[in-house]
Image (tube, rainbow, N blue to C red; front, side, top):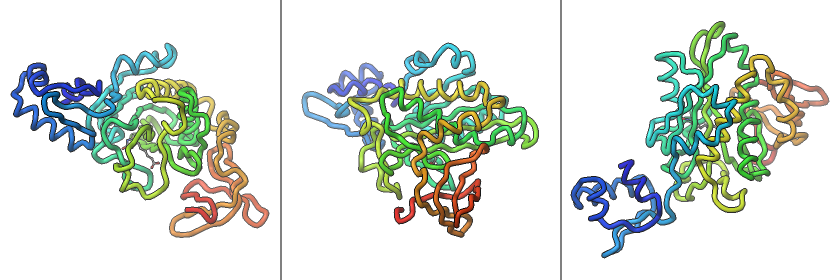
Length: 322
Ligand code: BTN
């Protein structure tokens, strides 16, 4: 199936006979495989006498092309890059690898997730071939306290990667959603395994909507957007993924020394809700205030009745908006 998708990724017609020869299977078997390709939600077209094609082609992840985007400094920190086709969740797979052995520096990218995870137990809609799903494992010696603010700093790193492909207008919503015009373009999910006071490994999961057709998004319960809406022309997924890996590894190389305070000003630059009236939903309670940025640990500062209060959990929404 992977080889078939590679061949069809050029968007050109390929006859059943040609495909059968290339894959050493019968034309009937090709027909069956094409049903599976269609089941992935890809726009398969078939025409008598011409064969099959995927309209518009596919921009597939490729190990070497992705690696070529990573700077020498970051590459020296990369332990392994796994390019997968379909996985349950890149975070889940990365977690399994990290449970088996120290996997610090491992990166997993996939074309599709069958059970992509979002924050707060939500599902992350992850159709084949049109978005970026990436997880990176990093080991920390100082226990979970060394991770303070990391999820916000990761937001800054992903924002830098996205700027490098020409998408200038994204903003960060506390703690780390990537928004464009109040619509969610990307999300970040950190999971930690190991000793909370000693050596632990953090699995950093990044999901970016790149060019997802509308009909895949029926299950998304909030407004969302694609990165292609923000740039001129197409996005090369390997370039984007390489830049994300590059920025993340550079961030992680000295995060244990720098901490979030080093990234706080940068986070401010992209703060979507700076000085806006917001609502924070927190363990069944709702708190209203004016967003006044974040503190050195990455906690949200809310001005409530003239006083600043800090919150390290919860879900922020603009007051009056969803
Ligand atoms: C959010 O809810 O905002 C976080 C979404 C994180 C999604 C990414 S996609 C790659 C990685 N694997 C997962 O299962 N989730 C994260």
